Image 1 (cartoon, rainbow, N blue to C red):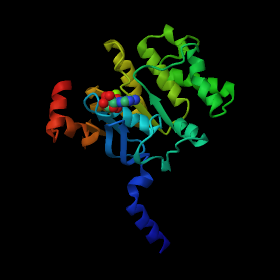
Image 2 (cartoon, protein in one colour):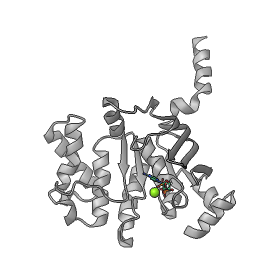
Image 3 (spheres, rainbow, N blue to C red):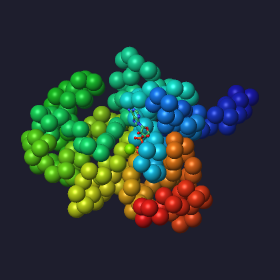
Image 4 (tube, helix red, strand yellow):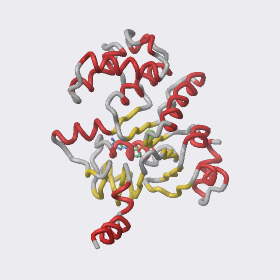
Length: 259
Ligand code: ADP
Ligand code: MG
C-alpha cells in the first residue's frame, strides 16, 4: 500500500521531484515590459539545456532569476527540489549551489587567480585555506591554466580569464551551472578553448543551462535546445530536430539569422 502510494505520488509530481531546476509559470516584468511569460522549464540532473533566441527575448533574465539575481513576479523556481528563498542566509546557500558564468568574466581584478578561486569557498563554505588552495589548483589544472594561479586577471587572455571564471564557479561545488553567452566577448581564436572546457563539464555529468549563439556547441553538447522569443519558450527539441526541422516561423527566421 505504502509502495503504491509512493509510486502514485512519484508519478503525479515526477517533474518537480526529479528535476534539478524547475520553473513553473514564471513571470517577470521590468516596469511595463513583460520579459518572462509563463515560463515552464524542467532541467533534469546531468541534462545540458542550450537556450537560444533573438536579443531581448529574455534569456539573460531567465538565467538571472534562477539564482535570484532577479526576483520574479509570480510562479515558482526550485533548485534540486528546494524553493528559492527571497533573502536571508538561505539565499547565500542557494547561490552557492548555482554557479554562474557571464559574458564579461567578472573576476576580482585586484586578486590573483588563486585568490579568486579560494575566496568564496573559504568565506561561504568555510573550507580551510590549504584545502581551498589545493582544490583551486586542481580546478585550474582541469581548465588548463594551473600556471596562472599567481597571476592577476588582467595578465590573462580573455579565454584564460573565462576558464578561470568557470573554475571559480566550480570551486563552490555547484549542482547546476548557468552560462550566459560565455564566449560572446572573446576573440574568435579563444572561443574553442572555453567551449572545450564546457563540453568536458557536460560529459562529466554537470547539469548545465547555457545561453549561447554557438550552434556547434549546441549540436555537440546539448541534450535539448530551448528557443525563446519575446519572453516565451516557443519551441524545444533535441539539437538535431531543432536545427534540421524547426517547427515555427520564428525559430526558422532566427536560425536563418545565426547559421
Ligand atoms: P536576452 O538575454 O535574450 O538578450 P534579456 O533577458 O537581457 O534578453 O532582456 C529581456 C528584455 O528585458 C529586454 O527588452 C531588455 O531590454 C529588458 N531588460 C533586461 N534587463 C533589464 C533591467 N534591469 N531593467 C529594465 N529592462 C531590462
Ligand atoms: Mg542576454
